[in-house]
Image (cartoon, rainbow, N blue to C red; front, side):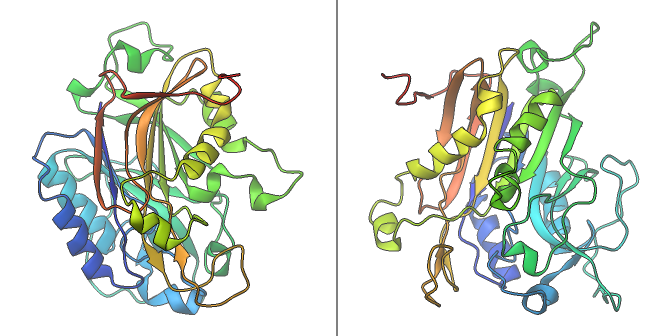
Length: 339
């Protein structure tokens, strides 16, 4: 499967400018060169909204706003799946897999007097069909100021893929005894989903990864706005250097999938980079700016191994693309393995 993550630094509240920036970064991608394109959490609105009042003008009706319109047009243009995060204003919840999705529209949407909002992702097929709609389950404290938890929890479903993108390796966990089905069991998550619920010490440490393993996940798709404590000056000095501390944190949280002896899982992380106004999670000082870790990566995990096919730097914008059937570029080893 030919997978790509788009990493960029959206500006808070500047939706059209952020869409234009994403289009610029994707300009060199040819149609039919990808099977799946993944973008970060809240890709076009930015992330660090301090309240419901602040994000309310940017909420989009369920699978029918500017983000879904962009995803649909991009999926049609590139002839690939597109998954992207957006702030959802609940209107009419589409089934997670439907042949009759609502048509995207730019018509102004008037919210009901009492609104329900979610931090969501929408996934669109190469023909413009909405294949999956996921709502964040574990909320970060920033999300809690405006969003509700998913009422249905994490989402794993058989995601249809282009016929050329699957091989027997992708179906190693399948119970089917017939010809290869042109689907892969895909688990969707958004950022904080990886962490224990509300960081509670009594919460399961690997609940998301363990659930994906139990559901026989074959492809893990994470759209994130993951923060970093690394100073901006350090990140900017070496923009193409990955934030290895963040990568290590992600891999630890994925340990149940790494340790699974049954097979490998394709892992796709699309994180944003850059900085937004606000304060960092570890300080009480206002207006220090919140910084994002970048380091989007694609690889395969399982059978005790972590193999990375491609990875972005912590402070760079661009596209990382990997053919998951080809040999991965790196194998990650832990200090424990090295003795």
